[in-house]
Structure formats: structure tokens, C-alpha cells
Image (cartoon, rainbow, N blue to C red; front, side):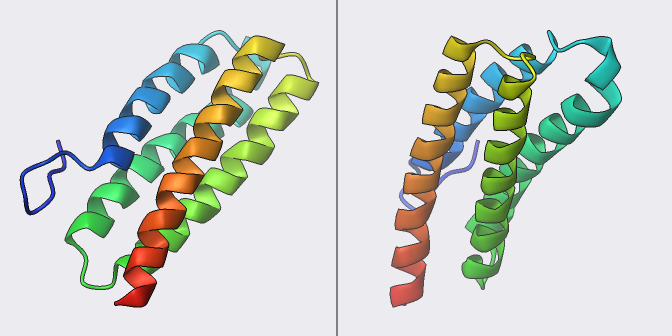
Length: 118
């Protein structure tokens, strides 16, 4: 678990870990025909975000990693929208995931602003 200097878990890390678990469960249900395209891409991007958040925590130049997280979240948003359009994810699942991506984006934006002020 990624901890701050005060020993607390980073809120965005804990949030993303839960969202990742939910997303992996949802992509397991996608049809086999997209398992090696959309499913793998979504799963890998979501796991990469977790790694980038860990890297940013220990990095001297956090902004570089945080911007990469932002790009990955935006890419996930587009891929999830495409999956909803193609009916690989139902409407309720789509809304849940998008709300999670939006919340993660807000948390990330706060961290980016805090780092930009330094």
C-alpha cells in the first residue's frame, strides 16, 4: 500500500485500487471476440495507472508521472465509452465506471495543482 510521509494511504491510490478491481471484474465478462483487443488494452491501462501512481509518489518530478496518469484515464474514458456503445458493458456499469474515472480525475487534478504550486 502506498503511504504518505505521515503514514496515511494516498486517497487516490486506495480509490484507484477499488476502481481497478471493479473494472477487471467487468472486463472479464466482455465477449471473447474483444478479449485480445479492448479487454487487454483496458486492463493494461488501468494497471499502468496504479503503477504510475506508485511511481509518482516516490518521484522527484511528480508532474511527469501525474500527467501520464491523466492521459491514461482519458484514454480509458474513451475506451469504456466505445465498449458501452458496442454493448459490451451495460448502462449501469458504464455510469458506475465513468463516475469512478471522473472522481479519480478530480483527485488527480488536485494533486497536479498542488505539485504545480511547488
